[in-house]
Length: 354
Image (tube, rainbow, N blue to C red; front, top):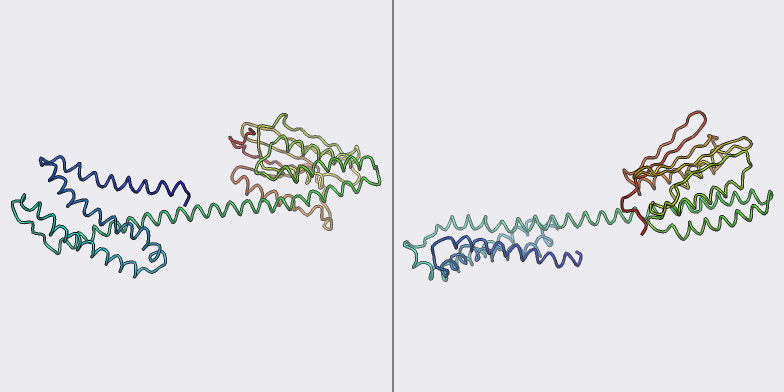
């Protein structure tokens, strides 16, 4: 229970009992009787009963329900409550007989006889009501606490799975980048140096600036631009690479490292060994929707080529389900030799950088 609830719950209980105590008194004031008689009658007919009902309620609420009912010891729970009800009835009747009748009987025209069977029956049912309320309230509180714990556990699991997927992505990304550098070392040492410099910037962002739930879209765009330019160094002019990204996208926040997987996938499967090819990356914001599209020619990898294992797209699909449930679409199509992937995300209204 939170500190706020520990303070609020007793206040709510106190207010409820105050209402229950005041209602019968104000209703009794409508009769043409002096204030002393109103007070005594209210005390006898309502407040005395409420006092014992409160005792029964809190004994159950604070002790019996948790100790017996929720522990499946139902027989002991009902036996103890049976004793409580019997004691409360006996004490109420004793107080009425030896105290209240002394003050109220002279005001009545007839003796205050009460059929014992009716008293026991009505009092027994009435005394069961606070037990039922205590069980209902305690059950509701337990259910609420269980649901809260489930949500907290689900959130912890969500964050753990997201972190696990990121840890898978980072070495996967680094492995691909090292392959790029390796292919450039014998061709152009100068280009290899530039590639290492770009890779340093990319890894700095990847390791130190993506450990938060949301990042600025502009930071992601800068990261993707650096990566595309790094990849461009590796290929000849036969490979046409074009990209368009929104300008000044600082105000939009998204989950980090979502789009880089699609860019990696396009380079993996869209570039042949010795043919011309075109890769296109396009991002736009339409209302509250962010749309990212990649188009590349489809050149499937060989079975023994682990770079085409598909771990990136599989992880991306899992991340999207975790981070944007029911708030994204992720589709791909093949037509006319081109492989097109479209990812749309709903941008949260409050996802704005401060």
